[in-house]
Image (tube, rainbow over all chains, first blue to last red; front, side, top):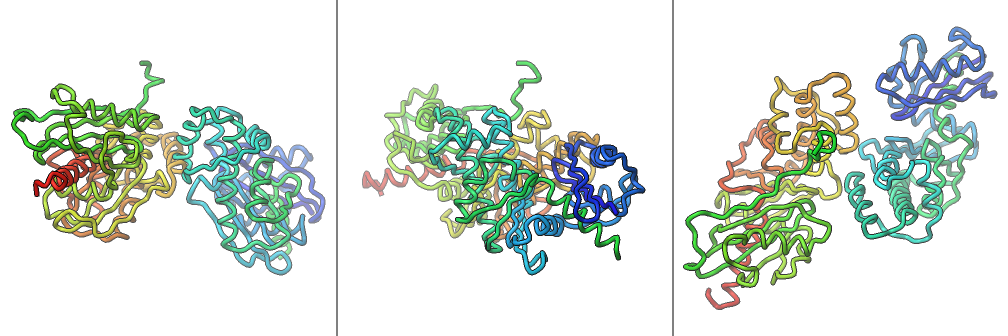
Length: 264
Length: 293
């Protein structure tokens, strides 16, 4: 039986097709454009096409992510169920790392900290959806101010060993601070490190509200940024596991949950 | 300048001298210099009466800006900075006013300035500046009783309006008026984060909303955020709004509508309230120092 999980995020749509709860057939993603339904459909169909599948061969589709309602019961995806990100994240992370006790998900516009209970159940969680400074958008905005590509930010930060504090806690104010740092001839490497350190500090203080217990997993789009992991480890004073393709964990969780809802 | 590279956030700088006033026949000349995060203001007073002022953008060097704005306030008056015996510095960059004898927080200065501009009935001063927003409770003497401030987040500050002016491509001075050109109020955008509010506004524009309606949604979000702050400190009449954003009618009229309290009409430019408070403190300090009272 094939199930699908579609994670309609703020910036990217991620899809996972899963066979018999264990074989991942395909992972696909695409940017969320103005028309969210169209963007999601394109990604979903790309995933189907790559395996020569049709919608009616998928037993169940579960949607998650902030745009999940856009595809709920709406053709052509017709997601039969929608689940909050926290539930999908927990399911996916537990599947990949059964020993996980704390899940940190940093997406484009939201950050989440999840405390896991027994058997992959969610015991507690915390979300920041109110401030861009605690999400991927922060690094993206700063990349623009620094005039470097967002994917170059992490590698740049790793080249620096200087710890420069950033005072601004707001994305808009931080932008001005970055410009001031550029004018004062601070290197891009040092500025990039300062940006990642500041972001890690904010994510850590959010996660600490639910507590941090090993094993700790970092997922979401920002988990692909190599510059973010070292300061986060330092802030939380713990090892952190990053699964392969961390941006798909929510979609994988949704695909796993699809199996369960289908069986009902 | 081409339309594309126009900086819509760039507000006009200005100066003013009161006509029919002559410093030669006055006893005490004092000044207040308010170096804000976005705008810097200087006020010159003669025997405690407003004589001249200037408002300009704060540059990269606060010290240089302080000298510039003071010189500009004195321009055409034949007075020089060294002729002003007592200057008080205030605002975010107050320690960088090289010719100031004292520094006083902008909270105290705004309360004092509002007391002067609007009179002794003022009990709540809302100062909406470039990078912060303060709700101040004061007594009949203009003394601060309590205050609350947001200086961590751009939502609900002038900086948020600058970002929006550039997005919607309307000069910042016209934003407020534009936002009032709607029938009924739309649902507000996010009031917790300027970045999110901007993204939502962009989505609304793409959906075909007219600029006026998007501006209304943005202003309303800002006002909701500011009202949260005011409600926490407690609002008591008379209520006044100071700072650069006090000139935005879209903000002020929505504050009035949603609070049900009409702010007093300013008799003077509300952007100089802080600098004016500083100049008044300067007068009191000078007189004390000289044994004049």
